[in-house]
Structures are given as structure tokens and as C-alpha cells.
Length: 65
Image (cartoon, rainbow, N blue to C red; front, side, top):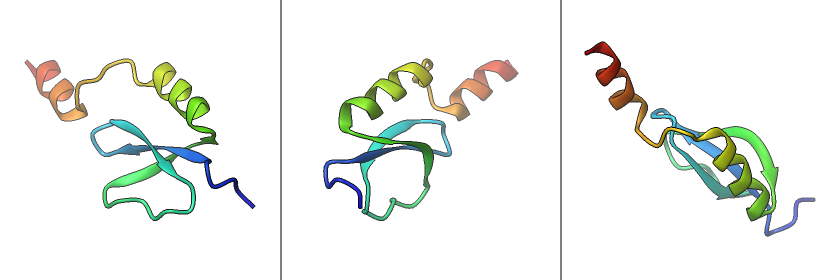
């Protein structure tokens, strides 16, 4: 059984990250990234992987010139 304070890292189609409580249905457009743990563990993971805060569509638009 999961601890009610457990969270999971989630990501949307724009490669933006957030945390979401385990056991709650994900909002539309969000998928699990794979990390589950307490709030601090999840926030640490996001800090390591989300290095470019711009939405994916903006990054692609700027890269296309």
C-alpha cells in the first residue's frame, strides 16, 4: 500500500513536469514519468530533468528559425 503522502512525477505533451498524488487520477494530457516517492524526492527529480522551462512547442518553433 502506498503512503497517502506519496507523489509521482508527471509530464504533459509540452514536456512540462509536475507532481501528482499517488492514487488520484491524472488530469487529461498528463502521463507518469516513472518516479514515485515523497514530495521532496519528486521535486528533486524534476529539478534534475526539467532544465529548460520553455514548452516543447516553443523550443521547436525557435529551433525551426
